[in-house]
Image 1 (cartoon, rainbow, N blue to C red):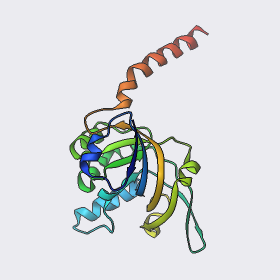
Image 2: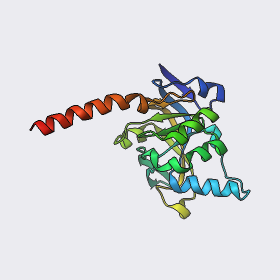
Image 3: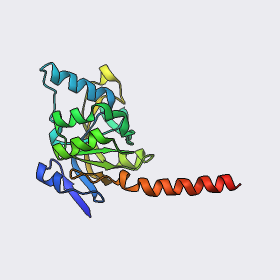
Image 4: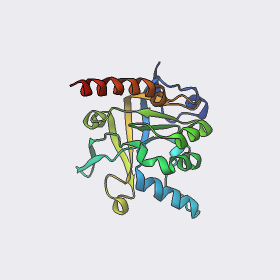
Length: 200
């Protein structure tokens, strides 16, 4: 099902999303890769506030290419980072900060799946290699945090987007997981390919 969503969304809306839904987002999203995840978790553990509320935005696993232009910022490319890099701490991040939607590529593991179900978040897939196309859906850069500390790709960037997508829901909050559903088909296809290779 195609869904046009305006951020922020409430928990009930996020929990209604299912594997196979195609989302287009309008509103505010933020980027966070490994270092930003860890910095935010460390701040929370030490009792410090972070300067924004992740629960009101979609989390984008992305290290964007951003250029300083006319006193502001312009996004050149914003393709997704391979999400499994964040698997070691994504469950704790979700339980702490509760973003309703994750945007990434490649899927995540069992720990994240359990957190999605607990928190009510969904994981969505954006096409890898389409960073320039994603940038066209970013209307403006609303801000950036930790640029000096972390550098451009690892900083937390805040984007105002319009019809950002298509985003395919591939892991949902009721245990749906497209990656696991496809494993038998992938295994069969791999066997067929290997058989052809061995047959010469």
